[in-house]
Length: 264
Image (tube, rainbow, N blue to C red):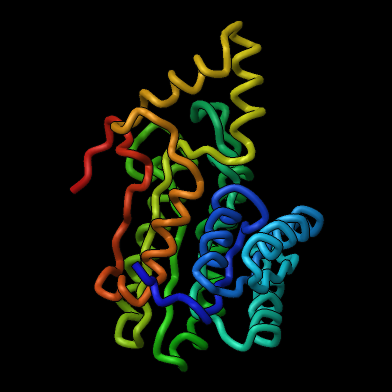
């Protein structure tokens, strides 16, 4: 299927590694030029080189901090100056799993505020900065990367993902008449560059093999395997395409069917 993305421009926060990098790679394979941003210039430049070498597309690394409005404004201005337009925004910059761990008695208020500032308000800042340009061209896609902790209790940091769902639907309702769709993708356990070392460390700690750990982890979803970050890229690429124009304001589970979450 031709997703009709060739010639379009994407902007991805948290694009130097993990899901963000996988999305950038998928966009580039579809013929898009992409700006990737994060706070770490070295990893950004390495990711840009890898993707550009593989696809031949323009991959522009820009250091930015989505917790700072001026940095976001400069990011958008630099993207427009370099590539001339922004067709797709992927909000992905956040700490995997969140900063708040454990019970209420151990939870730090500062960590929770950092989580919300980065993932909720950060997504808001980026959407607010790109929306006028998408409205002017009467077309655009905003894809927010969430997490299934927003649909289940147990992790205090999960409230940031619930808030992102509200933001997604609110923006979809407001921007839809201008040809802009806004959707949320919930990954579950996803294989990224962090997975190998993380599973190896856990295996050594528990005295088992990495294969044992991966097999155990894979029992948490319906397909009984760990979803690869590239598969999240496929979902995001489709939602970013003209062919997904009827889909907006919704959250899509891309976890492989996380158990025991119920969807309505």
